[in-house]
Amino acid sequence: MNHPLVSVIIPTYNREKYIARAIDSVKKQIYENIEIIVINDGSTDNTKEVLKKYKDDITLLYHRTNKGSSFARNKGLKKAQGDYIAFLDSDDYWTANKVGSQVSHLHNNPDILVCHTNWNIMVNDKISQPKIKEYNDGYIFNTMLQYCAMLPSTTMIHKDVIKNIGYINTKLVIGDIYHYLIKITSKYNVIYDNRKMAVKEDFTDNQLSKKLSPVDRGLFVLNDLKDNSLFTQEQKTLIHRRIEKLNKIKSRTR
Image 1 (cartoon, rainbow, N blue to C red):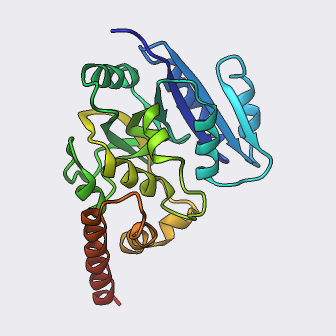
Image 2 (image 1 turned 120 degrees about the vertical axis):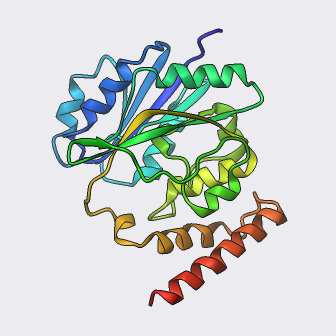
């Protein structure tokens, strides 16, 4: 197997406590042909100082003011030189075998351009298993309409996906990456590796998305997608049906 370049995109905003852990987990990857792109999205804490010690290890981009994760990820995507793109939230981290495992999966399955893995969650500094639903490979668009079966920190895509799908919608105030992953899975089959190779930090902060119920978050994203020209008529029908179901659930909980 050759060793194509992997671009790891890490957007960060006020994550002085976590950003070093995220970067270090990329530096410790067994797979070596990696470029690390960090986008400091207008942090007002000590994130800038923490990043200084990595000046020789990363490509650092920045916004003077906070523009949001979609702007930051898109800035990283436009800078990326890799054949493969991996996303990593700055409060999450990886096991050392993640990048190499995903590159191997995609190399061995050249018709597949998307790979995601299982993960653990970190709650109050303790690792635990998430409430597992059903995670599959292949065509998972229908599953994605029910719940977010992929996380940004578990996902690797081929650069051609961006050429075909485009960039992340920057107009959404919540759910931008869920929105993007639904679009990806509408066009691409995926490989799923059940090994837990990412750890997601789960904590309560002032994120807008955490102030909304799962039903409201789903409605927000799907209503924006329902008439998107990217989808087939069959896919649009599935989106509309899911919206109807979520509206019924919402009406019963009022």
